Length: 318
Image (cartoon, rainbow, N blue to C red; front, side):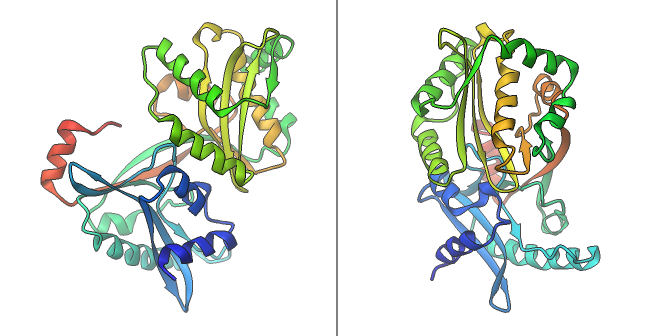
């Protein structure tokens, strides 16, 4: 079997592989443009690095797929391993994967690692750079009543105010969500950043794997105030896409849709990840849901100075 075929088999068996690193997710967000590096010990796969390979200006690059918060390294862990042995194992696995990565003859590499990867020293020692980014999550959503008690008073008031006037709908269609998101962004002077075909592939794949749901908050006239697309695995749900009609910004729907999603997901996963934001106003809103701040790592390296010059002039956006 090829490494990709072996990785598909691993994804069927290994529950610790995060959602955004799963083979079916990669098939949805970057079909025919992904592969995986593997490292093993005594015939067992102990590390993997699924990656999205694209060409920019004719240069080979590994980049983060659209609609994908985390990607990059997965490592098999023994939960009882002491720290010094764990770090030694990480160094060995990471170095083997970095060596394979550098054989791909890339001009640029960039991936955001899952929250579970907190050690990037082997990458630092090999000339890579790191940027710390942040997400906000609610730990253990199994008891929604307890979660609600940790919301800020303002969030609690918004939910109580909106519950009597608005209601949840779970039958939203993917094209309806996309058009709503496109229009709400347009009203704010922005353009949607992802094509409908990509969103539909992700939605369909998530439905097939019982790992995705659209939530819509409507009023009595069935007008959509806000909507949310959430995906999940056994460890966490992710608020992947969020659409709020600006004319209903004060209705409380933007808070209510999060609350309804948490209640829906309480028996399906452990945590709720808001997928973070480096925007101050959004960060403030997420914090009021009683979240904890969690850092994650963006790792990158330019292998070509000429590509770095082109990228800095024509393409790069944070």
